[in-house]
Length: 187
Image (cartoon, rainbow, N blue to C red; front, side, top):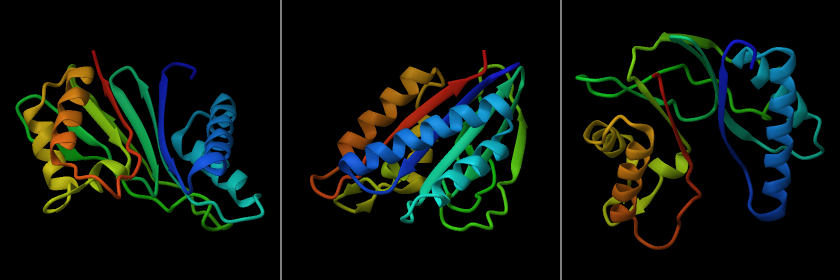
């Protein structure tokens, strides 16, 4: 986007062709919305409007973040809050949870949160398929994810690889939801 970079991560309802079509609608709507108004809250509002025009309710969770220099602004629509990994400190959740997209016509808009990013800060965006990964002792959960993030390197690919290994070791067959992760780092 003008003057920065935008990252989007979402999760649609359903499976198969219907989910793929919904994903395509959300992706293209968000891209078009960002060309006119790249504020994360504005992008989520336009996506909500497009979802509400469908004949059937199609809830979607989504996180939209824009990085400009040392600042990151994010808005969240029903999606898990991202984790900020900062050198020498435990990771922490950032942002404010907003309303699920596609659920209501009178969408109040998502709150935007702006963070000052230090060099080397890494932000982990993930879907609920990560924390919902089933294991012998229940779901993976956020507490285990935080431990994995804290133990992993900050470099984005190394962070993702480390979390993937922990998830694979934890997971038991059956009931697996799709999972997606995106790690972005300020140079």
